[in-house]
Image (cartoon, rainbow, N blue to C red; front, top):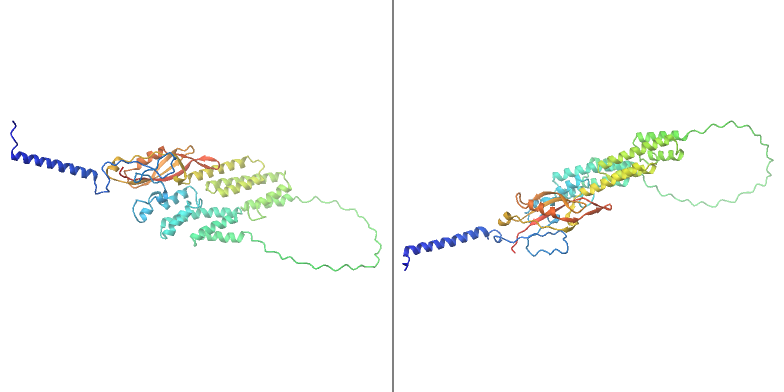
Length: 428
């Protein structure tokens, strides 16, 4: 029979048991960290998005990990104050720079560089970056306004000057443009007063007999000289107008008006052909310059004016194709929220184990391109709540998403877009 343990042995066993209990308790506390956010040690996490999902996808239960994609909600859960308002793609300064780089100076109204910079300056009158951005946009708008004035698009030029002066009332360039418009824009004709003439008195009959007509003596007329060549003066007027850059303005004294007169007077004359070729070539060259300056309105005006007088429309067609391609490229580069797309296939991002173990939550702002076939590409992280968490998982998930592509000018196009993926932990 085994002898009973001594008193000292019993004490040692009790101490050992207590140490085991304390060790288990400490281990549980270190793992679960109930003091941090009440999250259990190994929560079951899943991800869902607020992008429009296919109807077959079930809505996420309350407090499940979810990914918010609305840029307007980009500040939630990121802190307080102006720093939170300026976080990621919720930052209007960043969005304004993207719109400026894409040539979207005033359109679309809500996402244009001018609107976004103006909003920041309105909220923060001392924001130097916003004022500098407005200066850059104003410089480009002035170029467009001057071109519009040169083309006779007076209302467009006036609208440009008024837009700048409404936000920057002391802008010298805009004030000078407004004065030029006032000086050259045609004024409405004054209303003419209609005079009511009184009825004339009846004629007085002369009863005196008329004298007998005298005989007419016919003389031999001299040979008439040939009439002067009307194209000489008109051709000279056309040449002077082109030399002085009066291509479409002022009315009735511009190169187009003189060329049209030449076409009426001598449609097959060699001088008319030469003038026509010079004029069309100049306008198409200006159209190309306008496209390079991201001013499609000016480019379209130059092309339309060239098409009016061109005989061979091949070059005109090529210019219109180039204009359409530029319009598509500008639309593609203009970033729009991902919520404007229909999401066809959604893959949730994996929650990083290291973050869930530490009870970390966060968000990632991503920019990417939705291609014409609905796939995603050129995925970049614009901003994130953490330097070492969530970024790779967000990129990997977006790479698998599929969208219904945008249609512009009757065809599917690549489209730059952006969204925010929000990582939120919750107990199952």
